[in-house]
Length: 258
Image 1 (cartoon, rainbow, N blue to C red):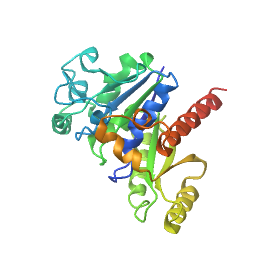
Image 2 (cartoon, rainbow, N blue to C red; image 1 turned 180 degrees about the vertical axis):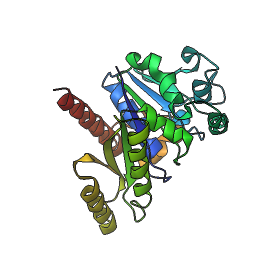
Image 3 (cartoon, helix red, strand yellow; image 1 turned 120 degrees about the vertical axis):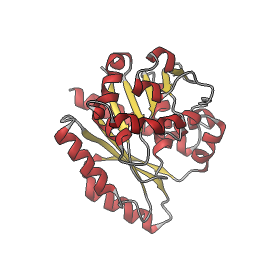
Image 4 (cartoon, rainbow, N blue to C red; image 1 turned 60 degrees about the vertical axis):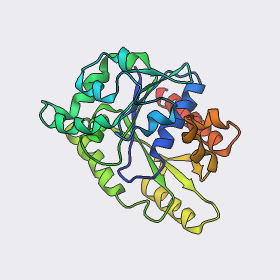
């Protein structure tokens, strides 16, 4: 059965979508069957994978509402091992519709249940908020990957996210755990970045990945070309960092299976 990982942080601009796109691509490059569910109405993970969201037949909206079969919604990517459920702006309306539904926090969990065996990893790229879309993602997931930007306001709001995770674990999903914390946009020349990284490691301990994502121009350029950084420039530091992260995730999975 596939492992479901929500990539979440209610603070925007922390490298959440960059991480979703590139960790999915890196694990697909390792020949793991991967599904990326874009659960952000902005649809940046969708366009970052080179998918024209306006031309897509279905979207995450249909996954939540059940208006289309999964086979109609899912999109193939540049990687034969990687599929995407695209998002469009119509996903904004789902939060309103969810309010009227029974067990509204479990709608996504129920929707992906039939396809869990088709993938090794299912990543959910959450919107930068703690609304019903994110609550659904956390309720459906085995773990949460939290990208944290190595800048001044990095820890601001993390308490709210950790509290939300605790509440979800208590009331909706007892198995939910913090999969890992990823330090992003790190600049070793900046003393503040080093200080923030130290604070995050002190707070989360061994949950912080050894892999650190440095500030890298190539990571910023790749989305405008509709490609994960592996396809845009595999020799770049950004590409190598996400490949290292994929290795770390796989090594944790092996250790946990023993």
